Amino acid sequence: MSDLAGFVALAIVVIVTPGPDTALTIRNTLVGGRSAGVATAIGVALGQATWSIATSIGVAALLVAAEPAFAALKLAGAAYLIYLGAQSLWSAFRGQPAHPTLDRPVAAVRTRTALRQGILSNLTNPKMAVFFPGLLPQFVAADAPPIVPLLALGILFCLMTLSWLTGYAFAVARAGDVLRRSAVRRTIEAITGLVLVAFGMRVAVGSR
Image (tube, rainbow, N blue to C red):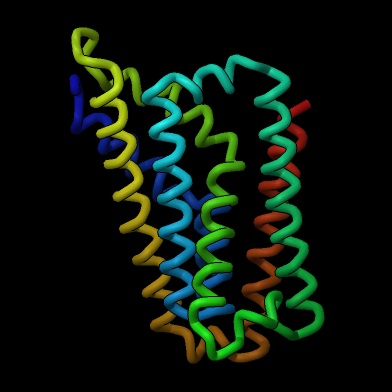
């Protein structure tokens, strides 16, 4: 690796910049508690791990280079973000959780749902498809074996993301008693819903 410190600095900027994964983590923590938030963070990290593997073997670069496939990914990601945002907006309008099943006492259902949403949110995020194959190779020495350093940087990025989003989940859960008050929760769900829809619309417009 040619510049690990530079990569870490860049990764911090990318990770702490609020995006759809952050909005989804906050929303799921509000709806399902800390376990749902952490599960969302794990799902996002698993999605990034998939991008890391795809980058290390060259698949991600091929996807970005294939314009129709990349456009399809963008549209799928846009549709999913708008779908999640619409759920939050409808929940805020009705004053009920967007996913009634998340209020069941069975934690496994809540965790699986949040985990799946985290994975899908990241896998359909075109920013990740560009970030991994576009920037990771710049921090690998030219004479280094291509697969191992790329995968190592990708996994490091995943772990940093997991730590950051898990911190978000713990912070939101800690303030849960206040944030889950009806008016406050509905306001936050409306805001996160608008944010998700806005991200989705921006991705959709950018795919044209």
